[in-house]
Figure 1 (cartoon, helix red, strand yellow):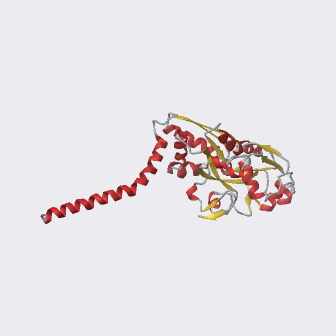
Figure 2 (cartoon, rainbow, N blue to C red):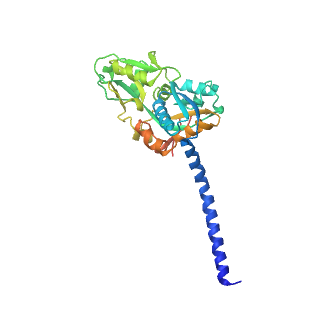
Figure 3 (cartoon, one colour):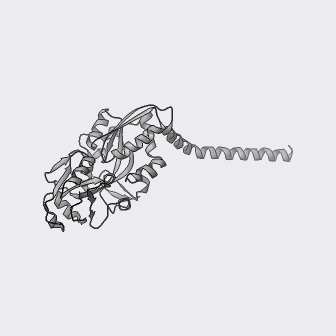
Length: 304
């Protein structure tokens, strides 16, 4: 055979092999992109009820609105009720998504093995006081003593002579579970007024002199309240990322088994750059990729 012809054939074979290798190498990327593109399909339709954690509610609502703009055939309904309600409702099949600040394994009466965990962001939680309280920093021990009833006057922690009014979250609240796990060290909280949502707590603390409670970072930007530093550490994004500020949790969106249809696409949309790098930080949450540590259901923290 003519050497020129042989050379041409060999070159074609090499090129074909290269194309095949390139195609195979990028097939995984294409699959991932296809999943993301499903999150903005004009042909997508259906109804998704997402309820539970009020700490996650502002983020879920805004992402839901953005998702619906891209998918007019889908209706996303976001409700509060607390993490306990979110987990129980999704487990019973009453909701497509159960929003929770805690791992399902941490909730009694919930069969976590039947639920699929979708972590969408990280939330920081901070102690907050009415703006009349003349205290800016508090030690973890003092904070624990306030919420267990051992300290009852702001004078005891460097403030003015004023009674401390403790506002707690209701039983079943994921925000309460995270706060107590990281602050109370197994001690019981003092009997006090209890409220069932971050929004309600925000309003009560802002209008009640001497009051103290705790809120997700997304609720800190309000008049009439201020967040306290703990042991001179500021409650902010940077300190959450490396666990210098330990009162934080993953925001979970649980489904009963693997999600499908509009629910699957909605959850996939949460992982997109538009959400993680734009909406998440804008509302005061921390993106999953920004975290320098991880935390498991037992509370064990490890570096990434």
